[in-house]
Length: 519
Image (tube, rainbow, N blue to C red):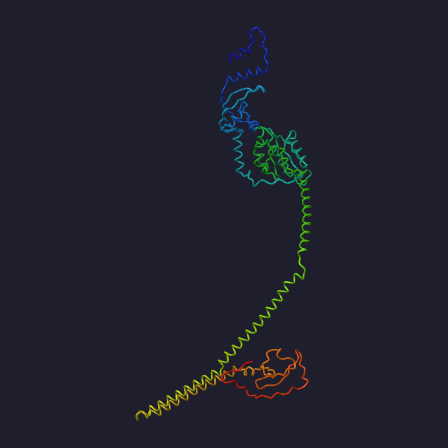
């Protein structure tokens, strides 16, 4: 350090040597670097915007009384365990040097470790936790933005570049009516003015002379944590939470975060981005509408063409009525044939079954039953007579003592014979009455009649009695002759037919052992 002073100090009694600015800056740089070398500095990180495009990081270290510029080169930044964060109090180790192009000194950090959270960041975190516990930051409270607002309200400084960017962006995308509520965005009264502006917009009547905005934009340009502190105040956060109008926050740059961003319905990275979120692009909407109109017209044309083509195809494929009825007609004819065959088969089956039943009934007729019982009774009588004769002969062979018992035995035998005979006669009478009840004569006695043709065959249907045919009608008490008339009429016969020989009115006798036909 003494050698540097000797080089720069003029010799006694002569004028100071003339040196350039670069030489002086380099001499100061060597002096500072030689004097301090490696140092450890404690301070709070401020103005940190993330790594530069080159990969280097630039920010400041500050405390209550001073501020020191800091830089971290890309290679060192990648090796750091603790990355820089806004408001973080750290202990940085590095070299003090100067930057000749700016006439300032700075620290080139080689290592960094946290030393504690800064006072502002601690206050901010405490306030954030308090408001979050009240539910002001919940997603359920956030409302969707209107698709195309009629009026856009802006809360910002009227003299800054922010309002010009918003107005320009709205005019480019979709011109809307804009109401600006001028406020200070930095300083002691800033928070109260912003809160009053939000409440004032909400207090406007919907149909008043000043239209009520459909969406609000609270915007401010970038700055340090201290510059943006107005938007971390509790009064601003609560005013935004109580707003009935959807609110967009656009505070600072994309890396800046305030408590207003948590409570707003939508956070925009920049004021320009807030304008883009507030309204759609009119040209894009018009293009989308025109494209949809073209697609609708094209779809309509294609649908009509497709319907015409399909109609023509179906018309060619559609059969004629004769072709449609061909198969049903054939099916009907075949069904009719099968029906006639089935009817004939059923009729034959019924006739065969009726014949079998008639034969079976004839075998179990009352006459056959009576004949069997009579034969059995005759056999029993013969056996009884033979037994009596044997017993009489045996009694005659007995001694004189048995002769006295013979009259009594004969009397008992006679009584037993009479009793058995009476029982057989009663049973025979019951069978005779049963025969009469089952005979067709009993049916005729109830008012029915049998119709026979001239061949003495039973007539079972109208087809067997053509008009003019000679018929014989049998009743319970006899038969009469008749002639068949036309269907639906009873014409008188032209000439009396020859009378048939009247039959005996007595019932016909059936062959022995049979009942006879009921028909």
